[in-house]
Image (cartoon, rainbow, N blue to C red; front, side):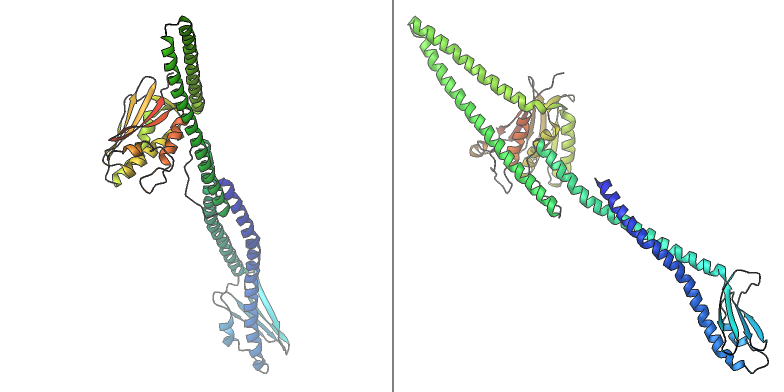
Length: 414
């Protein structure tokens, strides 16, 4: 994109410079000739004006006119009565045959001719063309610099908006406050932020609805199963048989619910891919170390096997871990430790700090959208949980004291 914008601007500037530079070169070339001609004619007019005083003299005295002859020039005078004379200028070379000359006629008869070497004019013409060429090249250089700045200013927002749209499609719903000073692109950025908020809210409502329905359904099935189990202990054989049949149907219904939930998790994780976890965490910790150091805090990474591979989307997992690190930096205290543990088919990534305990009232709603104890937006943890769940994992507050968040991801087994 930047290359195309830069090429377009340069082509327009090149066309403009050439459209002005070529006529300017032609005009400069001719101005040199006209300037020399005007100078010679001016000198000739001065000589012709004073020669009238010598009309009655038997011999011409041309010595006073030596100052009017330019370097390398030759002044030639022919008057009535056959009188003639010439005055060479400083550095006159009689061997030079190509000369540029101007001539004026005298009122009493005769003429005055003044010539200079032709290579003098050609040298001045070349100098004029070189100056014009230098001006053209300087204009192109300045234009290229301006074009480069404009291309960056135009392409950078477009690339960032495209990247923002790609991250939105990948599940990153965080708003981006940066604006570019270009009304159309700023409008697109605002629409993307609004859409991200709407999509995140919709996904959150659906997730909460599924969680509530699942909880209620499991609670009702558990209560129903307890009642059916009590009926199965009755002495009436027919009633006990019917109760055992109902109990079997209840178990099958619970299995169906579990299968549906498992299928939903698998579908959410369909876009996940095998991802080496430790290199990603090492890169994140290296990036955040200067920030924690500037705040007088430490950030440590404790890992197990270096070849631990999980099923996750790099962008989502990176964003989720960064949300936890930012949360620990803003609201926690002391050293922040990122720990990786392998479980039975699951890899747990914990982010722990040494801050004060999370109160029970806050712990119950810490992942709710808009919940914040500081001046933040209160959407970070909700988005982090959405990122992790989108890959079939889960994010939990494992311990309120010291505050410890845990990301559970499926281990990839080749």
